[in-house]
Length: 399
Ligand code: GLV
Ligand code: MN
Ligand code: MN
Image (cartoon, rainbow, N blue to C red):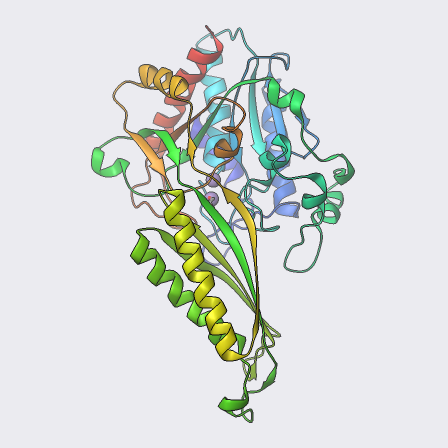
């Protein structure tokens, strides 16, 4: 099946009528529809579909076993995310399998298409939760006790979607069977367009992480509480936001507060608490640490000045990832003169890279915008991505 036809089956699921962004959060009805789409596509190709113990989906071309060549990405989205982040890798994987079959390719190794759960961490806070569980980087108890903003636990949400949360955890046998993992992903940033290339190869992922800051003050009336009497957590939070911008400029890093919840959330009241999430990324570990320390120090200082308390917790951390050099050189040899890129975006490929040889392919995003409905890749570039992925899979699985 051609890319456009495959793409059109998935495209409407979870898209908001207003704004056109995607809300495909883990273990929701939209997520179930995406998973059903995956299963249908696999079955239509005669690929055996299994959910592993963590709910990650695997569609096998050939018997599961050692040396498997695995490709895929994720189906979940950030709030009002773009259409391509995640799904592009999965649609391209099925399209690449079709192309290889049309060409009569005969893999001598098992090939699998995967969809990993909760890559964005948009519902339960920890990015790449499916691969972190699979590889043991997050324990079952840690995962089960994560909660969403409404207080529902990961375990209850997973059970509600018909999967068994008691069985989650590391699967060393499954990981040991992966000979190579290749993730195709929409480019997040704008390096390929000026270079005139539709496809790039991943070299590394910046170290990055998420921190949750809980500021607790005292709720009061906006019309009667005197300024001097207030213990306003919003002020301390505001100082932290400005500190993040300053620290990022100073250290040449990125620091973002993209999510904030004020409690109880009345427009005519001093809030009782402000919960905020800091996302920080840097080319170097040291610069990342300096950035986060500077933001936390300023947040502590501002909290003390305002008479509010502050608790800081790291929700997830990913050290610098350098993809397997040998595999990258093999991919480069197949694709020819293709740019090699570092990225500040996180991926399941980055988590798996701690255990198995991993390569990434990026498909040009003409504006570079991502985590937004404006994220885009032209159809011709998506098709070029499929050709590139098929060539890489052929090299890895058919020789
Ligand atoms: C995932 O897209 C991330 O980089 O947070
Ligand atoms: Mn993303
Ligand atoms: Mn992604």
